[in-house]
Image (cartoon, rainbow, N blue to C red; front, side, top):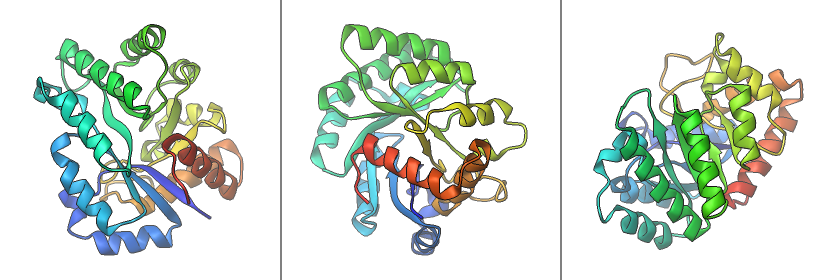
Length: 259
């Protein structure tokens, strides 16, 4: 049984200091590949160093919407150069919109759009963070699709409604479920997990955040993606093995991975 955790932050101090033991646990849980997200290009060397120790790690480069105030005249060139500098870079991100924690909407929109352009030119998928911004996100993506062309990608740590999900699926995006799908009150997310097509579903931890039940409240780590997969399989009324096969295949398709 193989799993791919499609969104981790193991460079964060909560995990980096204990990496050897954490890696042993994810291997025991059946996690064969991981995709390391990036919140700021300044992390790139740090993430790259971890990947040198962990051959099953691929990674992204990009700027998180909550850091969009750090964007400057050289940011696009920096991200482009970094993305081209290492074959293990499989995506641009994480990028997106977060209207829940920040109100610099126009700045976030500009930074998101510029990173979409990078992904389009480099033919790489995007890892999208979207919180309290679904309508604006859908509008921006539809506009970009019409004016420039399509970009593949994933709505990471899905937290929207089934109706919003349908619109992102119509744009060709994948939907990734994190530990939030295991939370008792996450009814809309659970409904989304039941409805997403089998060829568009992914699983992730977003570690060290959002540990799933039964680890909720603890430090999250890649091994716990198995709990996410178990819950999603139960919601979809399919065997865990089937869910693992589907999500692993989908991750390999989107990020051009091999297992």
